[in-house]
Length: 302
Image (cartoon, rainbow, N blue to C red; front, side, top):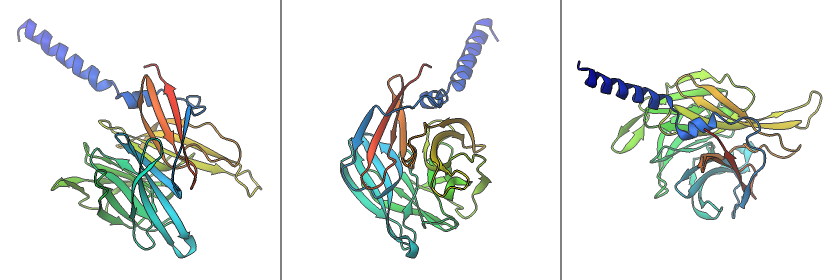
């Protein structure tokens, strides 16, 4: 090989290796977060409708989508599952109901670039779930499959053809293979996903968000810690983990600041994160019924 050609090939290989090693903007900035990064919200936005019990959150352009469970009688397994569309100031645009019978509890949701994936399960562990996709343009839902366990959150990776889920309390990960047929994604073998225990125990994941173009998903949630001998919650610890979908383990963990006793953790269920300026912007909706969108901005030096 001529020396000039060899040099060009070597330069191309070096550039390719460097580009492969540089993480995406969101992934790279998330890995620079620490427990001091998110202290106080920079903005609050009142949600202008009754949210019931919010569960998961995602964004499509300038619109937020929020899943929520409306409990009518938990003892007799009666309720309604909602998916709300709202603008970024909290005004309701559209809504649909999802689920059937005792399966009325939506979980954490995520947008895969074309569809929103929504699990709807019974409001108890070791139960069952229906997995839907929703077209954000039309709000039309499609049942993808049914599964014999409670599914608490889902995130679909179309590039890898993988659907990642967690069960009640996120004590177990599930990983299904997906295929695209006729313009829609399907799960060819829903009854036999790969599965493994979740090795993280400091929080239970409630909502998930994939980072496009990477094998990472951000999982957020909380855990309630009780002082020995006491019946009331001692404190609620929230956090966010960057989980790799190959080994299903957290590669970076960010505990959230503990709030006052009796106040919900910031990551009590719905969250969304996006690049913002020289850093990241986070949205949290921890409260039931009369809800507020809490906005956190974090400047990060790459």
